[in-house]
Length: 450
Image (cartoon, rainbow, N blue to C red):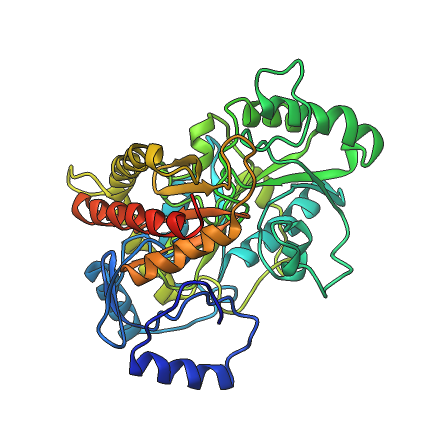
């Protein structure tokens, strides 16, 4: 682990790093030496007693914060009854109850059906299978910068970093990638279009469908409503309405990968709801169960109802303990007894964070753009605001310096800081986090000659 920022490592941390290096796969992407001891809410402590604010939440997983007592109690209560019973072969209350709750928050007017699995990549794999099964078509459209998982089917759609695909070719066939509507870094000529997203959809219909893959062979478009790993990129307002109209025109399903953006992270249940469009299938995981392994495919009833018994299944999906954690999570996200839930807090404190970042932006020339919805916030760092040249080394050093200053951050895209706090984050900790970001940026900018 070599960086331009030096880490001060405590003795217990050093011990764990040495032990870990002997037994854990080197494919993991640990970027700085945080060894967790315990956490509460948005705060975590390492094994040497150091305290940090956590704006990573296990990659947007711990939606309700670390060790929320209601989630912990739900896990304990269910574990004392039974820990596992294969939901693909038998029935049990938590699975049915969770499916009912998820159907109730599905982002489309039609009745919904649910398939429960263990992870985001499994949800995407299952959605791809369902789309092929339902339409009888073999092809898919995906987007540059998209991340949909690391298993072989979802990896065929993933295109955020070449390291994720290198060494695994050939990919599963059937994916055609096109530009994502990133208004800060457009790849297509925008002449004649006021909305870059509409330009991307026109490119899909007028170029891709005419030269690469015919639309009547496309089962679905797989898309993140806000790109995660690709840089926390928010599409332009016209993109999803135009894409939905195109899918309807050619009988193509629209699959919203909400693994990172869903379950209240953006201030709505689903990020696609910011764009006034209804998808056909939604993939969910990460924040769905506050840290317990769980994923879900949420599909229109008309699409999933004819999935024949045995056409898809798994052993651990819909684990009763995970379902119990998810039910408690949903209660906390939506609120109860007239009180606001964490989704409302995500919207309000998320905007508070964005406002705070915009306030410090004028004194930090490395900040090129601040973007996001709710508590899904990207801060793109650049070498020059005019040229928008990526500043990966600077971004990485800011992350490392923030760790030294008591804040956990992760990157995404080529040079973006991503802020994904627990949805219960309150203003005092948000203020402290902003102060650390401000301080860390200033220190690293000075070292880089800004």
